[in-house]
Length: 593
Image (cartoon, rainbow, N blue to C red; front, side, top):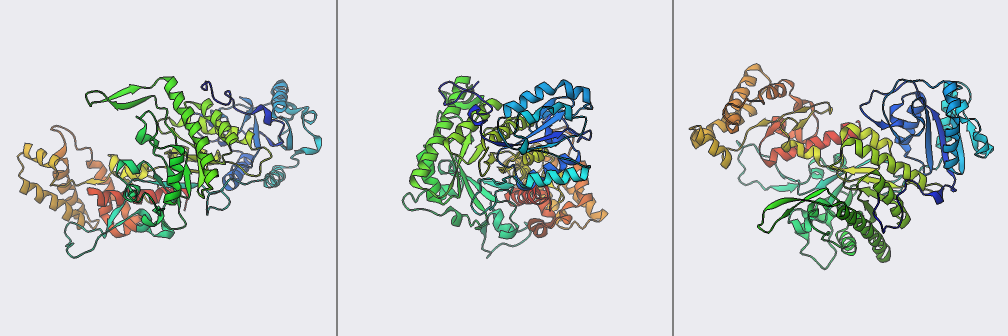
């Protein structure tokens, strides 16, 4: 239920818009289906030649504005291509087709006016659409005829005749690119990298971001996402630039971001989720995006979390449950901010692209606000608050949002740019692309380098994760305390540490070198384990040393560091490993190079 007092009642489509002419594609389900887990968009489940053609078209060109794809399913009847369905084994015969005819006609009648209808059905499916010529102009209905190859060619021709343009971002061109934004929170490394055995005296060190390490032409992202929240957290490039409150400051220059990369700004809503309201007004956020030279700027949102963490009167951190009323207020405030933000951008004629951020509680509320934001005039929309949600719910939301957008873009010349905040979800990436998601941001592959115990280094082909070899700093307080409990002197601790580093440095893949690394590491690393606890890294290290995945990677950091890239030790190695993971994500998983 959408909160009262908003401009529109809850809806999945705008009734006043059904008189606008849309494009309708009618397909029959295929016996061939993909082996999927759980519920997926119908267009992703069916794997006959017609569905492969449509998927290839959408992945290459994006969703034409106003296109609606309906599928006659043996199990579900007439469904939207974006509807969530499960795998099944059932065939639609002519008797069933006759039985569902009335419901199919009712659905077509609700579609409203059609600029063009393309029907691609087998003979058993045709009784289901008997009477379609009475609902749409006969001259605008095209039936695929002939063999499979001929029908496929006719459908391709029809799809290519549709307007197929998505709202763009600066320098991106057609808007059909699937973009990845790399969130920044001071994730840089110090160059040059020096091994502990090397002498660093006299060397000048510099801080470098990933785009500097890899070079402008090999940067593993299409842009950087920088949060205005850096201004009050004291961390990040923005916090270092904020002293200049008068003249415009070029963040791109400060971060040495190449011109081909986009600079996307948001407000960092998770950083102030425990507050009653955001730290920025829409006017302040817009002014800051303009001052710092952002290409894209997100409106001021407030996440309607189920619970937040606050300080009580004693200064202790405690959990506080937010009532549904308060959560709805946050959604409504987000929408009000979006409207004021867009008005400010237009009034001051700011050059950055304004993105309206939507916060919702469920599928219905996200769809509701899609309509509201399109009414405001937004051509670029972002969905926030998805991070805590499971894959299935995120897919349901994105599917419903796509359907709403398609209903709203009838007779429009271009479609809506759709961004997902903080969402990667590798298992459902193909679904995102199929549903017309334009861009996303995530630092999960970077942070896995040091936050996960068994997934620190991603193989160059993206096929598997490896656990990095733990060689903790002997100077750390925690390790010193652990050594003291086991009657190991600090001098002995330092010797054990150096033996590990030397064994790793001398590793050449031989059996002898392998044993030396395993012996030294398994004597030193487990010092932090509790008594009686198994060394669960033993087999993982063995696998890593046997496979030597760093030798198979040609990215800049692996070429320069060698085996050091898989050593879990300090920010120098850990962040570079995160850069490598991001490189694999971008080039192998997202781009498929």
